[in-house]
Length: 75
Image (cartoon, rainbow, N blue to C red; front, side, top):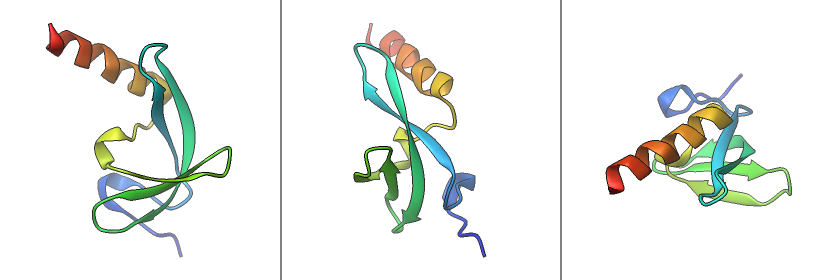
């Protein structure tokens, strides 16, 4: 049985988190859980993170594009 979470995420899915805004880098993480507010994700190094849904992206390109959109709103 596969765990289904909000926004169409499932346990085992790969999501991308922005790791360096200045360099526009995003790293892959594996979705593990959802506690009702935050997703639990694990990176390649094995570290576990709790992240809000707005910080998770389905592709590296989508993550970088969000930085470009944020930069446009700051001006």
